[in-house]
Amino acid sequence: MPLELYNTMGRTTQKFTPLVPGKVSFYGCGPTVYNYAHIGNLRAFVFQDTLSRSLSFLGYEVTHVMNVTDIGHLTDDADDGEDKMVTKARERGQSVLEIADFYTKAFFDDIDRLNIQRPTIMCKATDHIQQMIDLITRIEANGHTYFAGGNLYFDISTFADYGALAHFKSDDLKVESRVDIDTNKRNPYDFVLWFTKSKFENQALVWDSPWGRGYPGWHIECSAMSMHYLGEQFDIHTGGIDHIQIHHTNEIAQSEGATGKKWVNYWLHNEFLIMDKGKMSKSSGNFLTLQYLIDQGFDPLDYRFFLLGGHYRSQLTFSWESMESARNSRRNLVQRIARIMETDATDQTDLSKTAKAHEWLNRFREHLEQDISTPRALSELQGLVRDNTVPPAEALEAIKQMDTVLGLDLLDSAKNLLDASHCTGGMSESQIGELISERTKAKSEKNYSRADEIRNQLNESGILLEDTPSGTTWKRSIGENS
Image (cartoon, rainbow, N blue to C red):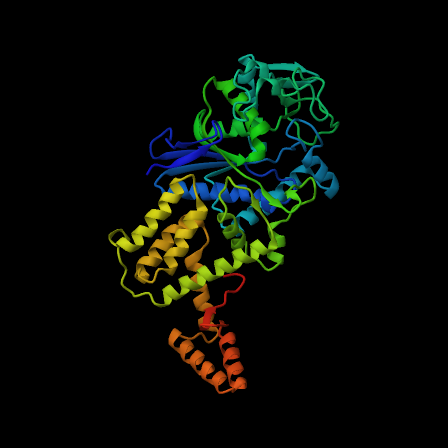
């Protein structure tokens, strides 16, 4: 079946048809590097990674571009509030570029730990000022701007389709004020393309331009850099749902205002990760970092597993209970795969010729083709590892292919688990079974000291026992770094 994606532009699920057959051009909004990414931010980047992996799995050649915003952003999308970079630099007693460099490295550390593949191109805003100036010049030449109070503004009244992505109605654009309205604006929804004068007297980073020495408005960077690397039209643009109303709406206006043609064909937006108190937010202080999860004993891949369990367009509620559930589910999955590895014959079967494994893989593919449904795809993987009728070699090959999308490092984790068990006196399944039988007999004879001795012996070898009404079950334990 063909790939279908939910397009925010139009609010419908649509068949995906790339501009160039077999190739996908894809831009995703990247980090603003004035603070650590919180786990809500990281949901967007895990989704971008999963989308890119899915497209590759489905046979497309993907060019994925992501920006790094190392020019100050205001604390409000609507040109209002403080400059985030300057504020952090003042707090830390460092330069803006030092702040940007520190948090850029921290971001890369986070995405590496989450097994997020690096985009094809990662581009810094400060390296593309000339591209922004060139694009603004085109917008100005097409009659979409006005100069007031030292700043160059985009005039939304000159762009007939303004607000189509956000489904603005005409009355919405007549609102008289928003937070701390800029009195230089003809319409409160107009936005700055280039600042030469703002509320900040000593702006840290400024450049020469046709409009005076200053710095770009923050919407322009995504338009300029995406077109620089992907061309004036490309397939997919992603971001969080909080970008729909202002940032992405303004990107469309300025991009199409410059080129006079449609800019992006498919808009994909991921929902929020929320906590008990609502949306996770840096400004409110209501956020958690990936490192904090690690400090609480979780593996970064536990968090990735948690995110994959929710569809990207559904709100996902974070709790410690849900994280524990994700950790346990991932561990159980890896343990089952380790057992498959133990019974794997050396015979390597061609997966394309094996019906049973191929059925699981086909259903996995079909769920990806239905708007990247990772919860259902993950369910197919879990079904596969429980299916004892699939020959081990075939199961492992199918798992390998599924994990190219899920990014959970399943085979390596399972191998590490087996290696760890062998290094600690690991036992074969038959040996484990014999000891469990001996322990059961000891308990029936009320020889509890011997039963405890056997449990301890198995624990030291990484074997965890669980007594149930139907008998004793076992599983291998997983270390934090497996």
